[in-house]
Image (cartoon, rainbow, N blue to C red; front, side, top):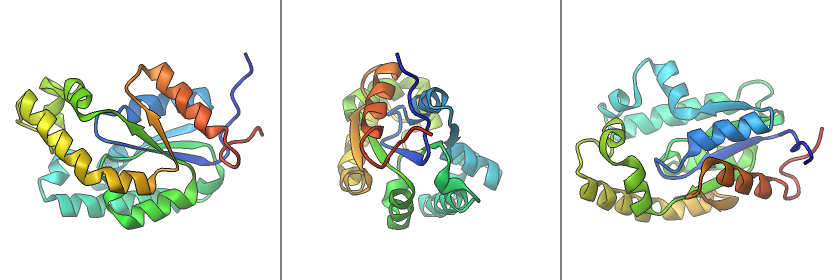
Length: 190
């Protein structure tokens, strides 16, 4: 099997929390010999607080930090012309300025997973690390995820240049993303 082409532009992954952006993003970067950036981890490093702590100061303030971190990342010298996979936060698309920046810098891939399946992935201990799900029962978690999906779906659709079904295993989802990346002007051999 041929070696997959190297990434020569950034790829930005969007989707709901639990859709696998970080896990699949790491795998995609590994396969394509690219750098991987988890925007939430970058926010934590820049601001010195966890995402949960930053959310404790209000979602609006967290979104301002998210915007600043994304804009700082894309403004780094050489960002636009290098292979990098960015896993954004689930709500990054809620800020129109973020959407403009993402679409200007590379393909934006929506990783879709149905809210009920996200509820299974994020139930129990995993939900306690997610500020918008913390303390919710499994049933309430699914209801919250369904509500968030309906609120965010238009923004995800506006931001995405491609959509993949992210309900499968890591290799399957990574393969799907690689397939959409071979479309003209998104990825080339060096």
